[in-house]
Length: 461
Image (cartoon, rainbow, N blue to C red):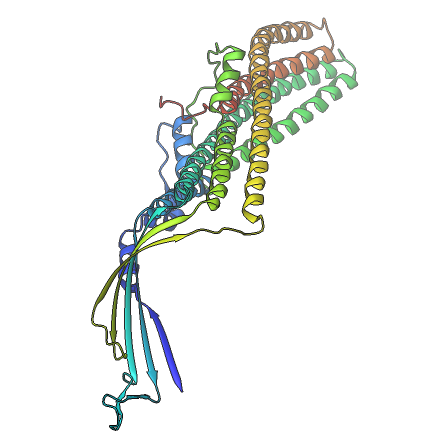
């Protein structure tokens, strides 16, 4: 009965201890444990600027952390591929125990009884250590490293894309709150104006100056304005919930002032320059370039199987208890392997990767068309909202003057209550159009920058 145990000898606990000591991902675990304390972060007493909001979102967002972890994983993959160029040290140990040791006999002198001696012992211990250095692999190792390096570049681009998306979300949420606050102010003003008008209308009715239905119209309009105010307040609450979600603050956190002004910023970019920038810097284009380069390397990697693989192997063998009783035996071997025939599998692997390369190039063309479209669409949105600001700004003065004149005419009993209500509606609508155009304009510029791939953190005020 023979029992055999095979033990492969890298000292595992040394490797584990080294990896644990040099683990570069320990900081991510520290970040994860800190998630529960994020809602307690202090907000600046003078209010939260847009730049500070974006900085907080990028620091705390799970999407940002996932992108950071993906980049870290790709970097480790690159380093792993780099290690394939270096020699590998392996050690193994064989322990064999037999239930019977056979004797070997042979006659030293003709006619004399044969000499007998055991063929080794019942316990044999053999240790083997090899050091293998690849010399030529048909450029397989080089192309694997290049693919890993491209994957690392792609992860960096994806991280940048995630950060730009988070920045755009912050723009939308931040300016959404600013315009919602203006809506509430406009509706506050509308309710106050209609309450005053309702009181005048009531006095006119009691004095027999207007019919009852004019007073009822005023009361209905007042109720509608109060309803719109309720809706505006709830939209503002929803905007805070969205911003708190991005900032990873508890929904019950006290409101703070947003210090960014709802203002019209200068914009002087040319459309064709924006398109060229988008084709050069948009993450979708950069990722498509990376995919094409990876597909090219995949073709070269598949072709490497047509070439022989050569390696230099050094060995150290020690045996105790065997028949040969080798003490220490050193060897050096030049090993070459070449698959001569494999029924076309390597050939078709190359053809497959060439087809994937064509698909990657076609996808890049598609992404270029999409970037051109999205940049032009975003640019037109900026121009549209910019023009809307000018129109809305002029209409505010006209609507306010129209409301003032109409109220004066009504107080002199020179016009109807319906005219006052229409004038008040036009005034409120002009104000909301103006604030909405300002918000849309700022967000549209950020969306255009994202389409171009240039959206970054705004400078601190």
